[in-house]
Amino acid sequence: MTYRIRGLDPAQFADRFAMEPGALAASLSQCLTVGPDGYYPCRVSLEDAAPGEEILLTNFTNHAADTPYRNTFAIYVRRTADRAAEFVDSLPPVLRARPIALRGYTAAGLLHRASLALEDDVDTVIRDLLKEEDIAYIDAHNAKHGCFAARIERYEEH
Image (tube, rainbow, N blue to C red; front, side):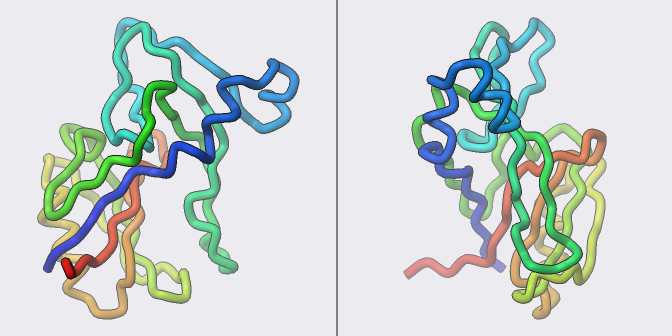
């Protein structure tokens, strides 16, 4: 079973880095500087931002399905993230070495099955979920904070 994980399109966040504080707040966003302890996973580059790096904290709807499972939460985006990362049959840094909740959805956007990856076994859990034909895609979330990490899709190379 082949899968693909892509970062978010950076174009949808680029204008926010130039906004005045009032407009930024109205967009449910704020700019921050990463502290010395790090752990700010960028949803574009799919890697953690480095200490001292400027990031955007913004509200994002990762699951815009017209179902009770619609999901909106805070995410981080690095200012320097200028292209969406892509991983095929491999895991990005933001899905390693931390507990990850994986939610498998049907094509209609309904939750079919969910699972936890607690011991850096995300790849195994993804493959197990994708064995179920009813699962069209998986949304990964940081298990501790609940924020969206990345979308995992079935993938066929052409």
